[in-house]
Image 1 (tube, rainbow, N blue to C red):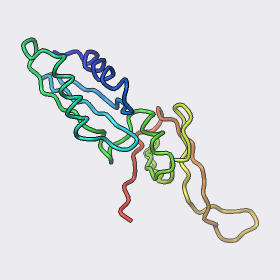
Image 2 (image 1 turned 45 degrees about the vertical axis):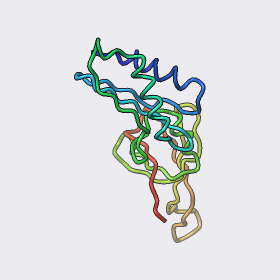
Image 3 (image 1 turned 180 degrees about the vertical axis):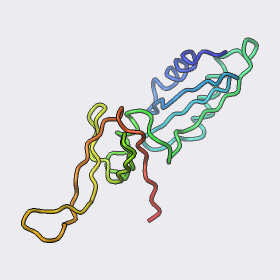
Amino acid sequence: MIDKNVVKNLVEEWLADKDYFLVDVTVSPDDKITVEIDHADGVWIDDCAKLSQFIEDHLSRDEEDYELEVGSAGLGQPFKVEQQYINCIGEDVEVMDADGKKVAGKLKSVDGRDFVVSVNEKVQVEGKKRSVKMDVDHAFNMDNVKYTKYLISFK
């Protein structure tokens, strides 16, 4: 079986002088290698092909038969690494907290593993009879949410 760390090191070597970042590397028991990369401005197919070729040049098919797939971290897929959060500051995201409650709003800030989502919601203000719509900040920790993902809007 192909060692995941060998593949990860090859990917990181190729990414070293580029603005891309590694999202995930998986190796299944039947040696299907999946590499996910991302970039603040999106992933180019040519770069996926170059990374794929780089990996193939450094792995021996004589030693292990494998299937290789290199691509971007899907747009609607949950975030896996901090850099994805940072790249989406100011964008609409959906968070499912540890209790299964969904919150949708603008990703306001990221500080280490902590992040804040600003949600426009009705709030009861003292001295007013009716609730008022206002932005409310919700703080989360990346390790304590089920998922966070970019919300795609077609407006």
